[in-house]
Length: 211
Image (tube, rainbow, N blue to C red):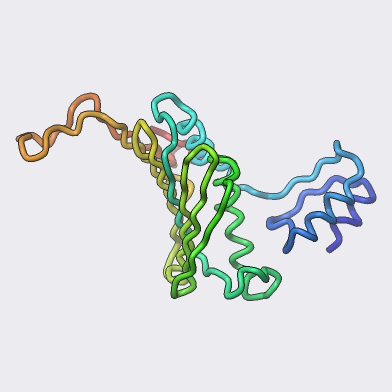
């Protein structure tokens, strides 16, 4: 690892994710940075994606209300030994899971506790508990790793349900009057119940999000 030597030379650093294989390596980089004003940046690009930034805006809006819970699923194989991420078999997990964790940290903050349960097909479920009473789940879908991409975030709030798919498409089902079960004769919902969707508009430069 050459980053500590570069930082000791007081040279600005931009590095690819993940920044380190262990907490010990990360601590070495922190200790080597003598000047707090020295720029050091890790390429956590997904947390700055337009749809993720829009999701953050919506979660903080009055229309969404407080966050009750969330579920984040991602297709990558769970390591055989989660305690040893330096093993070559953990490389893909370590390389990819940072996208999920960086988004989770930005959108919901740091959890108080994380509990995980391993399943078959290199899958696992993590349960995140927060001081606020909010709860979240991270689903590592190892069985889909070689079939196709799978990245989906669902957030339940006091004001509705928000879904972010593949970091590019947002759907917000706003709470409202769903009607009376078994008695409504019209499939058109009440005017105070709406579904909003944002997706890339490929007609515009850089595929800007459009409602």
